[in-house]
Image 1: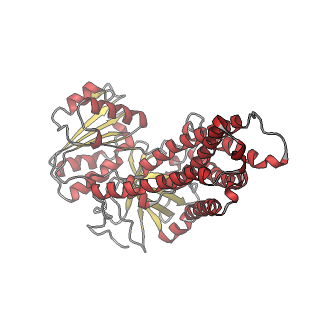
Image 2: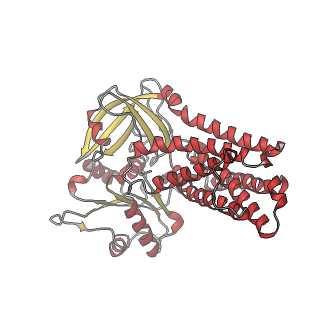
Image 3: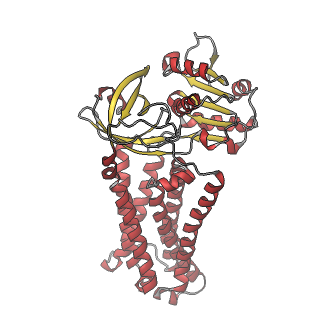
Length: 456
């Protein structure tokens, strides 16, 4: 088995380099969108020759919105492709946030696009004639994108399990790209002209290559197969999954990052799930994932056996203290199992004898929900600057801090902390949102508050 070396962490881009690369990356789609906007003006369709005044402007606006929606659809595929080059600049969680926001923009454009064109043609409905099949493809695309946005944004409210929704969403994205290609190449004669047609086909081919990259990810990851070394209890309704490899080096990662794992076992279904890496890249010869086992799928993990195979895609994320100055004071605020990225960072800091001031505020329902309590006690002994504050929300019989992390409590617990500290927050979505707003109201810098969303 190949041990991890003490320097087995990926190369870190400086903030300036991330800003530079990020600006260049953002500039590229803006150039593409600007080019798409120019197409209806430089390569007019025959239908626009008979339009004047407002009707002409509406038709041009409708065509522009359709083409911009197509460019954003290509961008949407890229944002969801889990490309590590983009993750190192923006962070995968932020890319997924852009992905969701971009979906709303696309939905809005594909709804307004036909309305503008129909108004310019004094038409309300599409005639039921075969020659209008490109318009019906466009109508199908509009409905499909609308359903994708609705089921994505309100997935939890609709009670759609992630492992069931995700393959359907991915298949719908492929169908949407094909539908857009048929629609844009057939709906008018603009794309019968040489340059627009080449550009449109090139964009569709690029989409196809990205899809091929996504679909072959599991095949590529199979070359880097790992195995389960042990499954150990980590607290009430929690376990520690230890993964090693007899052949490969473990992937380099930053403390605080996460990976997607897929298990090959007769006892656990082979769904892909994201989990934070709880181990330190300097602390062991394998990876550790500490998982709360209250879900349908995570409840099966206790049935794993040593030698069961594991495929890892990652690591991802920019949620790590290594991206900051070594002297920066750190505040960590965790809710429940959201402490796992903090555990990875604390383990790494203990390995490097990091003596900076660190405050961990950890909210749990009861003492039984605290994972690995003995290890956190040991970490407090190793890290002289570490202060751990447990806050319990459903244990009134216990002494110590009680209740939710409201503003007065945070103000009191953080009274001795610098307002320029780096603050790492991880936990349930609503808890993170509330803590963020309260920290800002207490004077902490927005740009120094980092949040990790472990639900996708």
